[in-house]
Length: 530
Ligand code: NOJ
Image 1 (cartoon, rainbow, N blue to C red):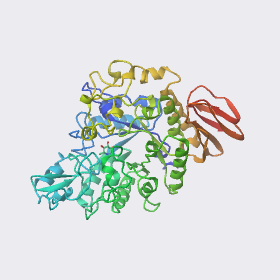
Image 2 (image 1 turned 90 degrees about the horizontal axis):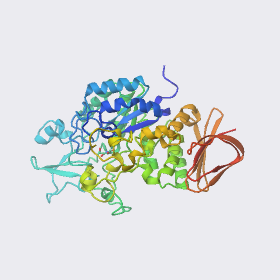
Image 3 (image 1 turned 60 degrees about the horizontal axis):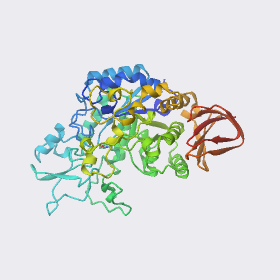
Image 4 (image 1 turned 120 degrees about the vertical axis):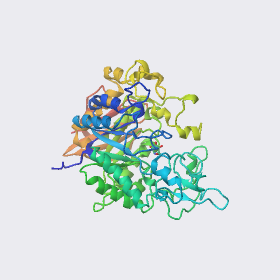
């Protein structure tokens, strides 16, 4: 019998960057046995699912997002037997496992691309996007790579250009070709049959490109020196093409054949353009089109209240919300807001309506790490240096202990460990009853206790001075969340209402309140209203 609500609605997803979670074999890079050894920590934390960034064989030009075999494990991370153990051990602890699936492109070393590039007549030629040079010998059109420069590379062997939305080492697959679709669907089946509970779909809006390869128009809002240079053009012919939505439905049907598996789209899109990815009740799309707006909006009461209201209003009746506060492509929340306000942000993430994704280490208050130039790894930083696009700072080793290399590895890790790891680490924070880690444990515990938080409605989203407030409601239970976004005292009116504080971000009060709640600077509270 299926549960009334699917597991992924009440779940909290924990995003692991496998290279940086736990090294078990002393090569300075995290691996599957390392993750396996830390599953009990995830249980203790109180999350429900882990999402792993790519673990497939890869030359690592883009740290695993350049896949050379979609149905195996990179030896750096282990092998398929290690993966089986991970699935078994995770499931034994009621933890679900979500894999990153990279449908848009492969590595240039993938046998498919090797065949495709070998000759114009190869049966796999049409598996990728090949075009003749422009009359002047240059690229076929003006499309740009997300990582700098043109999105076309000339392959001398056959005299044609191939398209790559990212690095030249990441040629885009041709999803208009039915053989490609079938081969990539087989990849999904391969992992579903091995027990994975869902996929995060990388670069999902890019799968299909304009059949006429038209030039993209300039973006009038482009801000040189601030925006990614790829934003010079409006990507109207390289993303969200109508044919994409057939693939969305096909993927959903495929996943549904295996029971309750979840599909999460990586979609950096305005709210209204996320909604088509939900499909309709008759022809459903993916369950969780990724909502990255908390990463992009200013940290300001009105902006956040508007965001919550706009997003909630835009969702179709069958659509379930989701929220993300950090990931491997964005600077860490504790660096953006500071440690005190990061606690308020944690309360926001874990009390909003919808499935939250928590990025590894954010539960400790890990900060971005300054990477010395000789240790830069990220190709984006190497291609477009010095403009803050580099993603190494938010990908540094998990801080487990105050010992050598923060307990991540016994050798120097692939990226430097934070200088504050002696203070910000699992071991020390476990022992400190007021730590960020314990705040997360309390929030996650409360979320499980209170249906109003996990599955309830959200209403009366409003601002009061420096505070953002909303209610979560289920079965007559009413919880008020009040978040002080400033570092000075504030108060929130309860009108004639009264209640009791269930949790403060300061982890030091459970007082009764009547008429109003006083909040200290950088304090958030959850109040059970009577
Ligand atoms: C989005 C991923 O999150 C990012 O890390 C990667 O570089 C690109 N897609 C290309 O796959």
